[in-house]
Image (cartoon, rainbow over all chains, first blue to last red; front, side, top):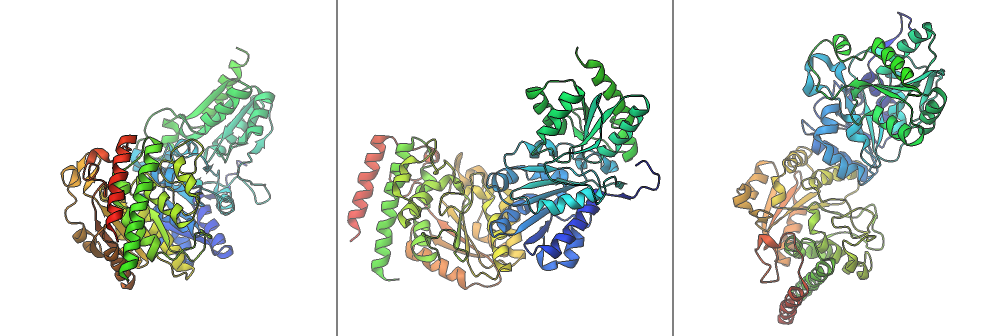
Amino acid sequence: MTDQKMKMAPTRDGFGRGLLKLGKENKDVVVLSADLTESTRAAWFQKDYPERFFGMGVAEQDMLCTAAGLALTGKIPFACTFGVFASGRAWDQIRISIAYMKLNVKIVGTHAGISVGPDGATHQALEEIALMRILPNMTVVVPCDALEAQRATVEAANVRGPVYLRFGRASIPVITREEDTFKIGKANILRAGKDVTIIACGQMVYEAMLACDELGKEGISARLINLHTPKPIDRDAIISAAYETGAIVTVEEHTVLGGMGSAVAEVVAQVRPVPIKMVGIQDRFGVSGDPDKLFEYFGLTPKNIMIAAKEAIAMKGK
Amino acid sequence: MERLNILELDKKAIEIRKDVLKMLMIAGSGHTGGSLSSVDILVALYYHKLKNDPSNPLWNERDRFLLSKGHGCPALYAVLAHKGYFSKDLLWTLRKLGSQLQGHPQIGLAGVEISSGSLGQGLSIANGIALGLRMDKIVSRVYCLMGDGETNEGQVWEAAMTAAHYKLDTVCGIIDCNKLQIDGFCCEVKDPGIHKHKWQEFGWNAIEVNGHDIAGLIDAFDQAEKVKGKPTMIIAHTVKGKGVSFIENKAEWHGVSPKKEEYEEAIRELDEALNTIK
C-alpha cells in the first residue's frame, strides 16, 4: 500500500463524483451551496443538473434551513460549504431545524482539518466531529480517501435522517478498493493485530497505516481500524479491540476534545477500560503553514502515532 | 366576505383567546402576550385562507403554515384543536411531561409543520418548501408567521434575499408587529425602522394591515396571492396581549402566564366582548 505510484485524490473529489452518481440515480437529490461551489465540488453537480442546484450566497444559516424546507417536501438536499461554516456558523440551525426534526438533510463540510494549510485557523475546521456528534439523530462520516468519500456520499442518501460528511481539500492516497465493503456505522479493520489497536479516521488512516507497518517491523503487532463513522459508533469493533489488544491509540485531524477519540473513550471507559492515547490537535487553534509542515508541527505523523502506540502498550496493567 | 362570516370569525377569535389563557393558566408558564397578538391572523388563515384538510394533515397539496415565532404556539395549538387536527382535551396538557404540546412546537403533532423556537429560522424553511413544491409543480402557498422582535435575527434577511432572488411568489410572510419584545419596545431595544420599506428594498411586495381586522387580513392574503414574481410580506400591526386590558401592551407579559384570578378576570372581559358581537 505504500507504493509510490499510489493514486492520489482529495476526498472532496470523491464527494463530487458521488453527487454525480446520485444525480443520475435519484431525482430527489438536490444540492445547495454557500458560494464555495467549485471548491466543494458541488459545481460538478450544478453543471449536469442545474435545475436541482440552488446557490445560496454567503449565507450558511439560510442555506441549512432552506435545505430543511426542501427535505420537508421529500427532497434529499446536500448542503455544501467549508466544514468550519457548515458545522459552526449554522450549528443552531442544524440543531433545531434539522437534527430535532430528524430531517433528511446531508450536511457537507469540506476543507476540514489542518490540511487546508495556509488559510490558517479561521478556515481549519478542527471541531466538527464534536459539534455534530453531540446532536441527537445525527450521523457523522469521515471518509479516509476519495473512493470511500464517493461511497459515503452515495450511501448517505440512503440514510433516513441527517448526515454530516467531512471531507478534505488536499490530495491524499486512495487506499481503499472497489471490492472493499463500506457501510455507514460499520468500521473497517485494515490490519490484524494483538498488541495495540490504532483507530483512525479521515486522512489520518493512511498515516496510521504507515505507522502500523513500521511498528510491525519492530515486532509490535498493531491492529488498524478505519472508524469512518464516528457516529453511530461501531461499539463491537471498539470493544473487541479493547478486549483483544488491551491498548488503544486514536488518531484524528481534529481536536482531541470531544472528537472521534473521545467517542472511542466513551465506549471503552464504560465497557472495558484499557489505556488510550489520543493523537490529534491538543486543545488549540490551527495556524497558517504548508500542510505537510503542519502535520509535523501538530504531531500528526506516523512517528507520533508509533510513539503513542508504544506508550499505550507500556501503560497496560499499570 | 359576508358580514356574518366576519362576525363568526371575530367570535371564534375570542373563543380561541379564552382557550389560550386557560392553557397558559393550567400550564403555569408560557408566552401570553405574543400568543394573544397573533390569534386574529391565525383565525383569518385557518378559517378562510388555507387550503388544508385536518383529517389529512400531510396532504401533499395543502398550503403550509409555519410558526417561526415558536413561542406563540399556544395560539396555534388552540386553532388546530378548534379546526379538528386533534382533541381539545390535549390543550390542557400544554408544557406537561409526556404532552405532544411542547413548550415550543415540535413536528409530529398533527398540523404542526416545523419545530421552532429558536427565532429567525422559519422563513428560510418556508423558502425551501416553496422551492421543493415548485420542483414538483404543486401549487400551494407557504405562510410563515414571525414576530417583529424576531426580525432582529440576521437570518431573516438572508431568507429575504433568497425568496426575492428565486422569485418565490408562493411565499407569504406575516410579521406579527406587536411593537414589543422581551426587553421592551422594539423601537427602543433595536429600532427596526419602517418594516414595509425594508421588505420593499429587499424585493418583496409588502402590505400593511391592522392585524386584528380579520376582513382586512383576508383581503391582504387575497392581494398577496395575486402578486406574481415576488414574495409578499404582510406587516400586521397588532397589540401584544390583545383582548385583555391588563395584559395589553405590557412587555412583562411576554413570557408569563396568568394566575387563576388573573385568568378569571380575563375571561370575564372576553365574555363581555363576546356578548357585544351580535
